[in-house]
Length: 132
Image 1: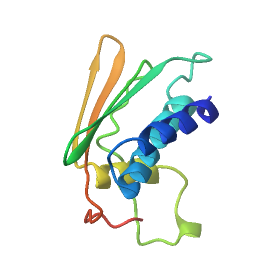
Image 2: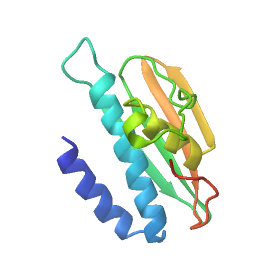
Image 3: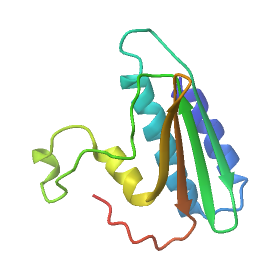
Image 4: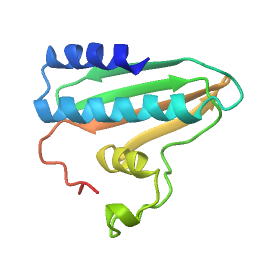
């Protein structure tokens, strides 16, 4: 499924006015959100649906992501011990941690059976978020 969506997203971002770094960050965020929804959002059904919208503004990009999976608030990810080596870290949670670091301006709500997430990514190449 993502093999069709991600190249389209990449093409659209490349035609936008945002920097290459911002494009990469937006792709990472989108891929993480969609992957989590596909892997964990539908435990009792074979599939569901999600929508992704990215609005590019002069100094920020707004990501609006909606899915009809089980209720899940990604704005409060579990703590990740970034001091551990990669080999010693438990699997999972790092992607949401990274999204939280890149997009501290976030809002989640559950409305009419849908998870609705709004993230704001500052469009700068010097975000003060250390990568894990």
